[in-house]
Amino acid sequence: MSRNRKISLYEQVEKKILDEATHTDIYRLKPEDELALDYGVSRTTIREALNSLQRDKYLMKRKGKGNYLLKSVINTQLRFDMRFDFASMIDELNKVPSVVTNLLGSFPPSDKFKQYCPDFANTESVQRITWTFYADELPAVHCYFELPQSLCISMPMNNTIIGKQKILAINSYYDIARQDITHYIHTLCAKINDEVTAKFSLPQGTPLVNFEQISYNADDIPFSFTDIYFNPEIMNLKYVLDYDRTYRRI
Image 1 (cartoon, rainbow, N blue to C red):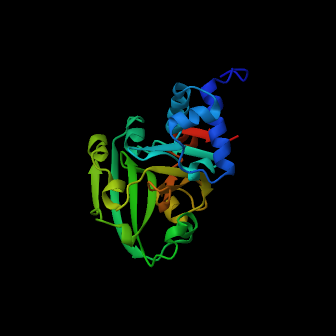
Image 2 (image 1 turned 180 degrees about the horizontal axis):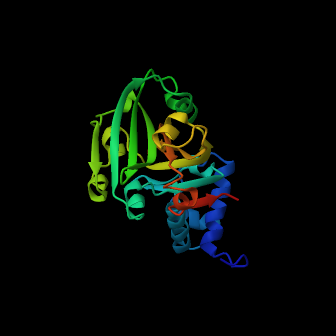
Image 3 (image 1 turned 120 degrees about the horizontal axis):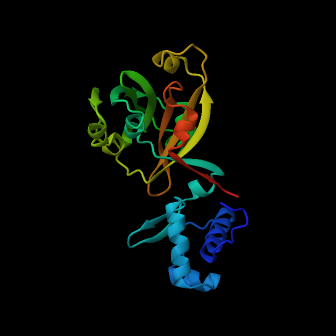
C-alpha cells in the first residue's frame, strides 16, 4: 500500500472517533445522525466509518441498544486478531488434525489470570482445561485454559477428536462458559515452559512462540485466560502469523 495514499473521509472520521475515545470516557456512541452533525459529514460516511470500526474489532453493534466502543481493544497499542482455527491450520499443512481435551479440575487462579481478569481476581477457584492439537501424531499446539468456577455451565469430557470437520463441529469455548465471548486480545510472547517442551519432544530450555489470550464478554470485561504454545517444528512463527490481522494504533 502506498504511503501517499489519500485518506478517505470515512477513514478520517474513524480516526477522530478512536482518538477521542482514547482520551475520554466515551463508551456508547451517539446515534448516527448526531455523529454526522458533530463531524460535519453525511450519515453514509458515518455508517462507513462505523462499519470499518466494527470490521477492525474496535466497535460492537448491539441490536436495539446502539454502538459500543471496546475500550480494551482501543487501548491496546499492538494486537493480533488470530483466526485460531487450529484444525484448519494443521489441515492446510496436509496433515490430519486431532485434538485431545483434558479436564484438570478446580484450582486457585494463576497470577496471569489475576493480572488479565481483575474483575475475577478474588474468585476462589477456576476450572483448568488443556487442549492439545496434533498434526498426524505430532503435538502442534498446546493450550491451557482458565475460567472462573462461577461461570462454568458444563465441563468437556476427556476425549480425543480426529478430523477437521469433527473438530470444527465442536466449539468447546462457547459450550462451557456462562458468558458469551465477544472478542479476544492476544499478546505475543516467547516463553520457556519445560512441561510443554517435553510434550513437543524438544530440548529443555527451548523458547516457544506463545500467545496469551484474554476473552471478553459483551460488557468488555475480561473473564477467561488461555496460554497457547506452538511447536516450532510444525507451527513456526511465520506460519502462525499468516493467520492473523495485525493492528497498530498510531
